[in-house]
Image (cartoon, rainbow, N blue to C red; front, side, top):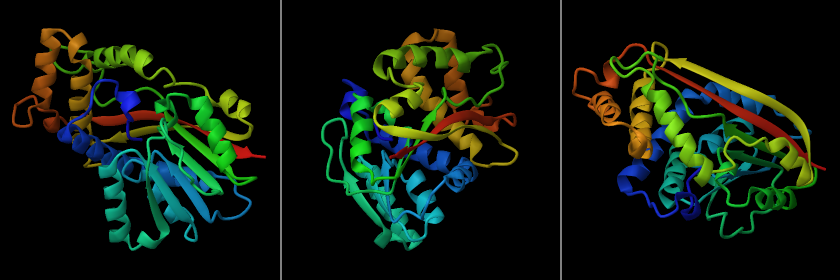
Amino acid sequence: MTLSAHDRGAHRPGSCEVQCQAQILELDAELLSRHTASLTAWLSLKASPRHVLDLGCGTGTGTFALLARFPEAHVTAVDSSVSHLHRVREKACEAGVADRVSIVQADLNATWPNLGEPDLVWASAALHHMADPDDTLRRVHDTAAPGGLFVVVEPVGLPRFLPDDAPVGRPGLEQRCHTAIDRRNAVQLPHRGADWGPRLTAAGFTIEGQRMITVNAEQSHFEAVGRYAQLSLRSMRRAAADALSADDLIAMDQLLDIDGPLSILGRNDLAVRTQRAVWVARRT
């Protein structure tokens, strides 16, 4: 999901940050591809959907997983970022499925365009960015076809990469970054970590399934882990800088110095440890 102006507040990311965010989304898609495929296979569908709506599509993680799972479906990919949507279009052309993807640029906190009547709505890491998520849920309910499914996937905390005793001299650095970011998110993103079950029910959906996806991708099995960790820690360093001590900032900069002796890219103990909560609801 791309942040809207409301989510960012006064901060507007520059082109480098947007590019970094896109790279993180691409690496996240690569490392979680098996879990995403498993999730789409788990869905209980009365018939293969013909129209799928991907809300907050980012660079297309859900879009392309859904295209692969449902070969007869057309996906409408919605996001507020023009650059992310351009990447979705590029990938669709490269994969030979451009005729099965429609691109819609919209900030759903400001406007709700005509999105047709989808049989399946997918929202991954998107709802907690909404200024009024209950209104969003009602709009999704009114948009979805009768009997259609709505899949909500939300992160549970921030991903972890380092062992608890790392780095040398500043153990627990990653947790201190998380604490600082969680404190800020409690104000800027108050719906992150919400239990979406009761809110989906209140919007008129019937909950049909819920599950937790646990990811533990070790560097020894996934070459992309190091790069994903580097980009994510760089983003965390920007977000938590004001709350970290001078020593913590020095330690973080040493990890992020790709040519330095303490570079995170030189470690052999990295892993991506994260969880995603999933709700599947039906419009009845």
